[in-house]
Image (cartoon, rainbow, N blue to C red; front, side, top):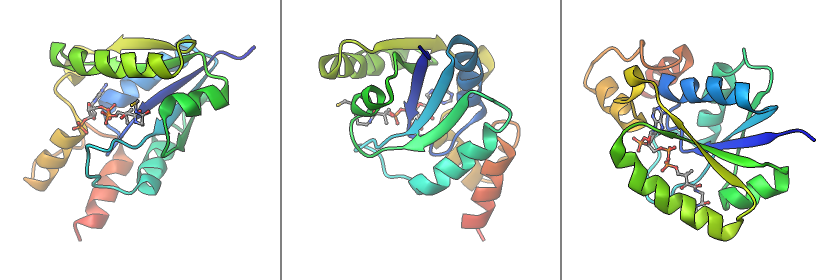
Length: 159
Ligand code: COA
């Protein structure tokens, strides 16, 4: 049986911090599906389609990683795919409380799918999608922090 894991998030946009988690998850599972999910608390900068495109290009070197999007419950998606785990990255202590609540809600929906938390590498702990966005629109070079394709998408919307 294939060991499938889902890595859900907003990915608005994907960053090198996310790629670090993807790289490590790809070694732990037979198949990793990155899921562009819907967070009702957030107003997205990029459409789900654009986020999927950016991710697709960023993960081309991984043989066992793919990307999808879904507007329903993440656990529902995971169950339909026969996944055994949901991956989440933890950067700093303040991530923990939010992740703990999300994990509890997910467990309530389906206790059979494990939550797996990977610690972000130190050099990526300050990166978040909204930080990237703020840096870019204030003229700071974000190229060391994101896959090349993300910069191309920013340039397109900033023409
Ligand atoms: N490197 C860089 N940044 C990281 C990171 C990493 N390793 N891990 C997390 N982040 C950042 C993200 O960029 C994001 O930054 P932002 O807040 O500036 O956008 C932030 O941390 C939050 O991470 P993300 O993984 O995108 O979480 P989210 O809160 O946006 O996503 C969902 C949560 C979408 C997975 C969740 O709401 C969901 O599953 N929604 C579908 C409905 C559902 O099932 N709800 C749960 C049950 S009620």
